[in-house]
Image (cartoon, rainbow, N blue to C red; front, top):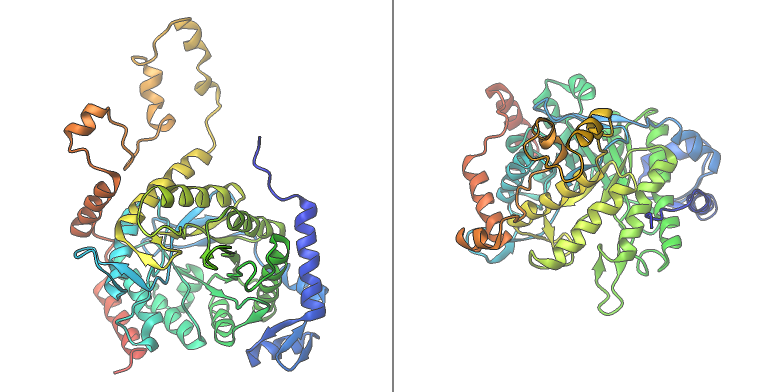
Amino acid sequence: MLLAGSSTETLQEIHNSSLKLVAERGIRFHSERAREIWHGVGAEVLEDVVKIPPDIIMSALEEAPDAFTLCARDGEHDLELDGEQTYYSQDGCAALAVDFETGERRGTRKADIEAMALISDYLEAVDIVSPTVSAQDVPSEALAVQELEACFLNSGKHVLTESVTSAEDAEAQIELAAAVVGGRDALRARPILSNFVCTISPLTQDAGGIEAALAFARAGIPVGMYPMATTGVTSPVTLAGTMAVLNAEVISALALLEIAEPGAKVFYAGGPATLDLRTGNYVASSPEALRLRMMVAEMASFYGLPSIVGAGATSAKVPGPQAGWEDALSFLLPSMAGASVLFGLGLLDGSNLLRYEEIILEAEAAAMVRRTLRGGDFSEEAFALDLIKELGPGGVYLDQQHTVDHMREALSLATLSDRDSYEDWHQKGAQNRIEIAREKVEEILETHQPAPLPDGVLQDMSEVVATYTPS
């Protein structure tokens, strides 16, 4: 049976329901600047609630580009968001980590961001680097700029940030990225940074987050709105009700950005979750949460927009079978639904716990999903009919030149999965995959070097960081 995606009629119903919510109930915008923009285009502003006619929403969304490029500072890992491939990003903002040396659970540090950026720079399956934890050893006023600095210093790949809660924090990240590429005009031409801002479900836009999004859009930085509605808690318990709330939050915010900055590069984004009926806990990897996340990707396609979809976020507390099946499904299903970016590699315990080995394990799953979904070669050369006829029944292909010529493109090599015989596995030490992943982390941290930054750029970055770090 083929994967049953949502029908066009279902997506249209979500769209229609969301437009009714936005027009009839309204969205709370805590930002005075946002309310002024809405008032200027004819929306009804009632204290902090804005009721927006459907034609204003749809006219604004038509300004958004359907494709754009996420640039990398090393110039080698640019990502075309054109609907042809799903890219993978680290997860972000965990508050706890399992110390790599002691094995003890502790609060997260800037050094964890640095290590995870370096590991992700090495891993081919990780396309985008993100501050994967909150740097709790950094002054709160400097979090945004110092976390981004840690990523730029340790990776040449594109960086996606999320914990930006004010226009000032956004300006700090914009200044730092501009220092790397040689100024704001250069950054607009080659955005090496993107961001998403979380909404506040239900039907609320945070003042600082919206003003940060406006600042990013003004600077030419791709930016998305990311609801994290939880069924039965901050949205109705049903999939339909949750999607109506989520979609209303996204389209109202993206329309605002397009009105303020026509043609702004925006993502349709989201990481909805479900309520566990036994414990009341947040669950991002239940069957219902996975379906919701598929629908985030589908709604993005409905509007013709690139998407960021929450993935990973296994509820497992340690690497192992549960983490494996939950993460694999959460990578596969939104990818099949057409997600542009999956945000969610490297964390356990519902995205709250960092364990360094986990991103090695999840990168293997991501690589397998990507390879599985990649289109095959069905050219005349690939069919090899002449060779099949020549060898005939009982033929052996192992020693044929056609096999030599095509084997590396036709068959993938595992980087972590065990494919040895039992005897070979036992002779090599009978290691489990977590032990192998740990050895890989040690190797990367000891030997990998990211693309270097010129001394002048390092000095400029240091000055920007100092400006936003309290003395």
